[in-house]
Image (cartoon, rainbow, N blue to C red; front, side, top):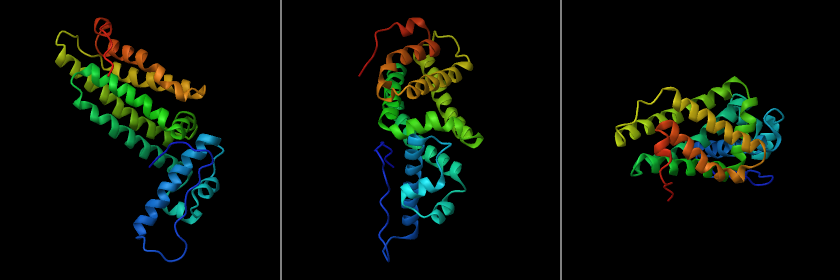
Length: 225
């Protein structure tokens, strides 16, 4: 699913009348258009003022079809967030092949920031809309936080394999990194600086190396590909 923002995007409806599409293909098309319409509308109007009629009109899908796929507005929004997050995580999982932990960290940070820049509608919907969407949406965010905490914990273990003199990694460090990076990006988004997120890369990489390893490791020459 492509989530790149376009002004006043509208879904392309399926052909009218009889067609050869299987029912599951019809539902998949409807679901894709509805989740994208949800993100686009929340990005433009905010979560609280987005309504199901707004979304179905934009997706060009019937209200009945919406409720066959989703229980309510929040359910659709969470599904859209889950789909986009899965796309991002798939991209980050490939970093295990990087030759050392610092290169994996730097490339991962670059890819992470670039992903948010490329998916402007989702970025605004996620960082601005999700905090107002209630407990179920916050639980979705917490599920994603779990993955990123595990990713930083794994980088910390890898750092100690490659640098055996490092002290044990405090359990709090992965949590601090996830919360700090998320809030820094959210602040940039709230101030309309989505297209400048790449400027955070060096500082965030340095911070992560200091917390996952030590100041001496962070002072090494930057490894940029």
